[in-house]
Every structure is written in C-alpha cells, then in structure tokens.
Image (cartoon, rainbow, N blue to C red):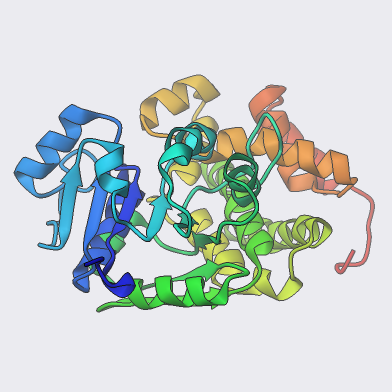
Length: 338
C-alpha cells in the first residue's frame, strides 16, 4: 500500500547552514525529513554526530531527521523537495535531480538571488529546467539559520501561485517558535531576497567607515525604494516589499553581524579587497554576485538603483567608497516618492 500523501517525507537538498536549519525545523514537528548534501564525508559525520558541526554545531537533530548520502535516496517516495543551495549552484542541482522527480512532486526553493549568467530568478531557473507544469514555492524572510536552529522565535514568507502547496509548507514549518506566512507573489518575494544582500553590503561599508546611524537608516529606507521599484518592474506586488520578505529581511540583513553580506562590507571598509574579504568569511557571500546580477537586470529594465549601482562600483570598478558616497550625495534633488 502506498504511503498516504500527507505522511510522505520531504527531501531537503543542501546541507549548509540554511538547509540544515530548515530540515531541523521541518523535523521538529515530526515531519519525516531527509537531508542530503554533496559532501559524503560531511554527511557521514552529521549522521554520526546528529548535528552539523561545520555550519550549525549548536543544533541537535530531531529524531525525524535522517541524513542520506545519495540524492536518489532523499527523493524516493517524497512528495515535496526543498532545494537550499546558493543561487549559482541551483541550476546544476535541478539538472541532476530532474530525471528523478516523479510527476506530482512539488518543488520549494530557498535560494536567493538572480542567476548571474541569465538574470533569472530562482523560480524561472526551475521552470526552465523542470518544465512549467510543476508546483513551485519560494521561502524567504528575516531568518538567520543559527537562530532557527536554536529554536528562537522566527517568521518567514512562503510564496507560490499554488496556494495549497504554500499552505502545506507553512503548516509543516510552523512548529514551536516558528511561524510561516503565505503569499501568491513569488516574484516580489524573490526580488526582496536578492536585492537585500546588495544593500547589506552597502550598510556594512557605511558602518565600517563610521558614517553613523543617520546614514545607515537612510541606506535602508532608500534601499527599500530601489528594491520595490525593481520588483514592481518585474511584476511583483508593491505590498510584498512592506512585509517579511521585503522590509523585514532587509532590516535584519543590514543591521546584524550574523549577516555575511554586512560583514563583507565591514571588511571592505577596513581595507580588504573583495577577494580577501570573501576568503576571510569563508562562506558564500550572495551580495557579491548579486551586485553584478542586480545591475544587469536594472539596466535592462531601465530602473534607477543608485545605491545598488554604488555597491557595484566599489566591488567591480574598485572606486573608493568615500568617493561613491560623495557622488550619491550630489545627485539632483527630487521628490522622495521618485
């Protein structure tokens, strides 16, 4: 007899800090969860220690969380698949699993950022690789992996045009101190998750240069305007950017040093080159690639994004941050709503 649909396990692909934290949260409520990562030695260590000592050492695995070393074993019998890898690795993972996905399997994405080569959002990459008929959702919002792993109160948004799928994921995740909200605006939620990383680099730079609290708040506020402007141009809903996946994630990433993007900006302000700063952090800094990809999308759509352009100039044109700020402050006066 086939396992009832509601009892089917979920496969989480990607055993970094975020994939591990989400797998733990799913399993906390008794949801049978399989976590797979590409590094077999790391996965064996996680299975033995019942925790991810590399990325999330303080979070013990619930009994419902299984560690698997073969992607086929993770997918076998699953109804929902959550891919939690960096945006640059998303297409490769989707191509790998495409032949193994049964009809009716639903796909959730926890990758943030435009794909650099194509300027596509994660759900667009998934549709291109897997076809347009599959239910897709995206997860985003103000959530640091370490705090989710520790069970601290957290909230996020799950967006999908398939309301039933989004609601099912929200119920599975909303256990203990975690609460998930649903949205139909997959584009808006994805744009928020991409652009906030660029703006977090900007606030890190600003704080590292001791520009003060006034500057930080101005960056966040005007950054929200830029994020909204781009999102609406791509087809997102303006209200989305006032919520968890917009303003919420932006404030979190710009103001707390758990953010790798903010720390990256701080290191740049201290004189590190982008390459040296990336090496010191030792994990993916999405804002570095996102600055380039966001600029490509903004130019294509003719959307004005001076703050994101400034970050691009610092990272890729090696302009001094002080000079870039001077240029921003000398821009023509205009209405705040422009």
